[in-house]
Length: 396
Image (cartoon, rainbow, N blue to C red):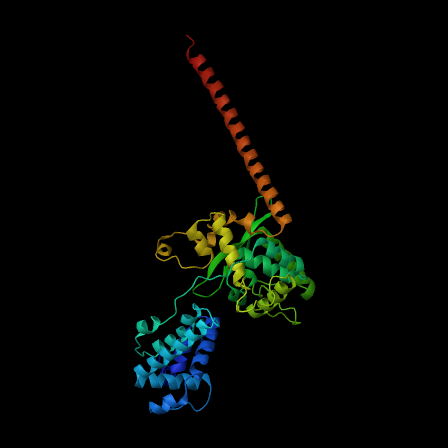
């Protein structure tokens, strides 16, 4: 084992330290984009006045490194730059160009860059400048709106996206991870499907399991057959869950591709039209609306709060350290089953599910009655045998 000089020099690069902070590629990409916007706003005169190196070009690596060198020399100047940036953001809030809740998100990448390079900034004085936040006024889809999406969907792929997205409640970037081996189907004793589990963010420290409805399981089974009709074979465990239809070879349909398909669906269904004057956001978030729907239905079904939070990938604090669940045993599925009638979109599928549940309950009752009859019969036999023994023992 040896520490290389190359790695030591690499650790001295301010922008690389910023990139190394992130474990998730999508988060890294998002933060980089926001940071680049901030860095481009800093006038070169600031660097000249501070007698630090002026950026030679407009590349993010150069801008980030120059800003860090300036902050190392004069943390107070860096703080003033960030303060001025927050003031400009607040003006955008006043003009209703951005939501006040967005301002902290625009400052987070700056904090990551400076913290990664061990630059002391008094963040409390900066965060106190943030505008007062407001409650989100968006909402999740309704079941009727999801039905409209299914009605206008011309492809099995689109229907699968809508049903799996709404019944499992994951974030949109999870589509970049799913493989076929992440899907587990659960069956009743008679072989019919009662639902399933899906592993979200496989290989990531934040990976967790959620569940999906029998309706989603049905579309998954149909999509497998469709996959075979297009490629000549069923998908393997390591194939991506969704296949891009534009490519002749098997390539993943990623989160961006899913969003584009949903955008077209929502417009066709009349759910997502032209924004009203003065508004910058739609009432229903295109992708997050599915997650809001999932959360709402689980709450209405009175699903255990901690189980609900786990199935949404939320942190449950210290409770996580005390629980004794083994996720691979899918012990949360019985709680999820409470919400299946509410999460099932199609009326016909809801009816099938209700009939199946009634049939299974009837079967269970029949088994219990058979067991009860058998126990009564055994008791009567034992009682008769006892009487015979008593009569025999009572003879002289």
